[in-house]
Image 1 (cartoon, rainbow, N blue to C red):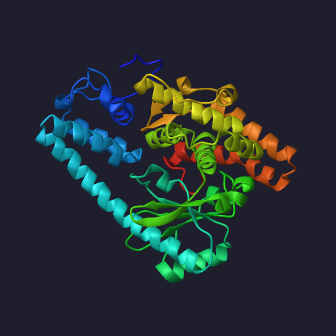
Image 2 (cartoon, helix red, strand yellow):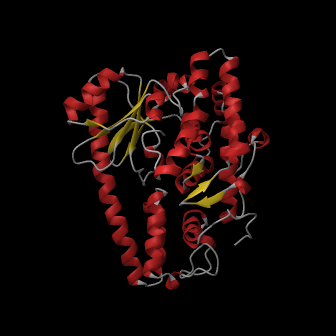
Image 3 (cartoon, helix red, strand yellow):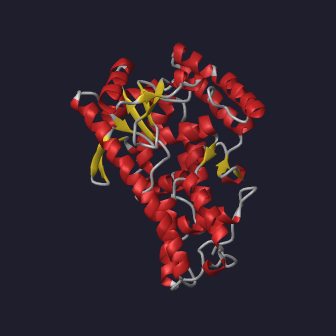
Length: 372
């Protein structure tokens, strides 16, 4: 295995093993009993407690199906029935959850389409065969019509909305029999609902794709990457492993139209953020493959920082807020002002206050619920 060029500060054994399972080429494993994360981590030495930690990390990072299926294959090849069984049980449990969620998601999308409403699944299906912890949708439909549909067709309850939800123009619905919340973004995207440039063309550019026997409309690849960037670089300031795997797969498959991505992201004021996102993905991939993604020079020259800035804390790969991410936010705000999108600029200008309130709430109560 190629020596690491950097290692996120705070990295754990579970992170290293899981990243290796997901990213290290299968043919590069020296033996079936060796976890592809380095010679110090052997399958036979992973205890039941350590497997529990690995499973918890895989769940929080939405990679149970992909990560533990590789673990199961290695254990099976090594004739390790105990560890094969641990992984198989976890996979079966997660598969049942996903099948239930996909069935309900299909019903929701069918109900929208029967009413003539556009509906696009964003984020959730990016992780397939894994699935996120909630179901995210986007529609241009009027909120009143959406609320009426969800109540009448699914007996859905509306979850309490945070300040951030109201700014972003999104609602969370609780459907009986579905553990996952259904989060529907309406007519706006972005952390404060400032992104109408991406939202306006999202449904028109979406394409139908088959998942688990159901046909769903999902964003074009460029839109998908921009939505991921908005979520990771401008709102949460952390990556899940699924973001790394999902985006690396798009690059590996040659699915990214970099000219379209550059033009669309520039118009939205987030090109530097998108470029930085992709370089971070590439740098992390390089840790376990020995080489990063084949990114155009325009992407690398536009990135503001790379994977060496990552830290690992509370189960996620964190990106720095100050000064790095703050500079990306300032560039986005500048673009909106230059385009004379004054209402959207006003929305985005509220973000620092919202983030400050969330941080204070987290420090005092241990939760940012109701704010972020």
